[in-house]
Length: 332
Image 1 (tube, one colour):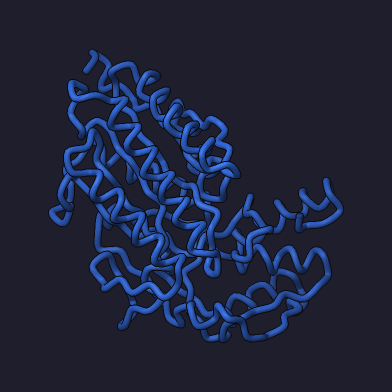
Image 2: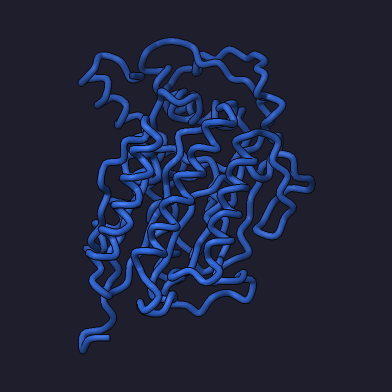
């Protein structure tokens, strides 16, 4: 520790161009923290693994004996993605973690100075769980390969944490929406509805209108995650922390709304009814009907003013309007 206080960590944001990753980057920038986000050739698994290992070594070198932290926000899979794709994604996660441990070395500073964050999915994990609302101690019952892959990823980081050079934060995240969402992926109801409004086309909805979801504005999520990592590194850990200093926390507004209520709010903002088509999909049975969420871990992190839903929708709409001006369409 220097006379001016502890050294700030050097960060590595994996999946830095994704919806969560880009807002984690923005939150780090607002704090004046250094971060790395080297390009990873995700389309070539072997090359991606080599790049991840190299980036892990580069992070430890950049920290130069000081603390480091990793935000794993990567993952292109959604509900309905093939199981093989998830196996590859989790193999890459394991490769990155092993490379971090190897680069850090056995004589490095204590593991409390370093931290690893894994972005997991509350919806994927609790889709088949009974008795909503769900908290960090609720039974995990995934219904899809997506949910099972997230459960496996949590096991990977939990197993790695024992004897590892870092504490681990598993973030079970609610439904994210906001500027920067990849509309090529079949997810993100709010963004999809906004894009359909701008393109003047209907949106298909595959689940019942009374389905309950917790919609978290992505910039708020980025701030919450960076704050949680700071608390993880500085401690003390909650009594519920697992072996190796693993903390699991839900990131959500803790105020779920029905899809019908979302449509009503968008009608008010758009000043016309969103054009929707209700239908059935093979993935509908993989979706939980009631995904109300509440966090019991580090509740002090949730005591903040979150972006109101109408303001978040307007920001999402503005972002899509800018994309439309550049490309002629809100969707890619």
